[in-house]
Image (cartoon, rainbow, N blue to C red; front, side, top):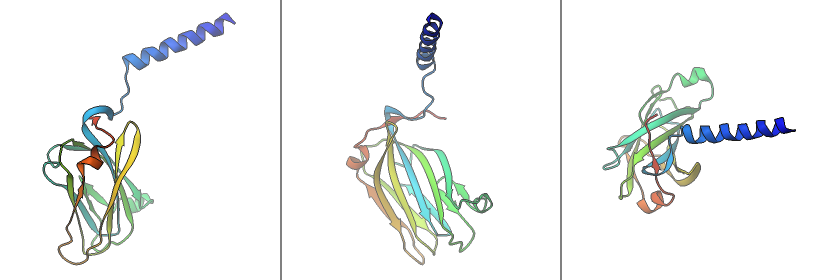
Length: 172
């Protein structure tokens, strides 16, 4: 009986030791100067570019990029991603879904960005704010313009964006 108690006490001591000596390696910690946003980009256009506008274009970091669709790896290799630019073959209208996790330096201004896309298809960007290990839906923004000049500008109010607070950013 005593041996079980000793093992239990030792396991508690080891757990406490690791919690305090080796803090969480999570990139997002509450109370910093960044917003952690998850962008879910759904598109059937052959190319799409999302561009943060000043001052939000100054200090931002993509920490994760994940191709959700297409599911087959052989089809995923046809998609080229550079920063927030998604490229497939010319006139490739297959459904694509890309998930980005991005840290933006927090500013006291509305968050403005553009969605530019090719001549075909529709691009929708769903924005989530990640704070305290929870996701908060900010909004959904769609560009369905056809033909030339497919650039559309969007704005997220700072009130809506800052509602759930900021996080710290540590380079991974």
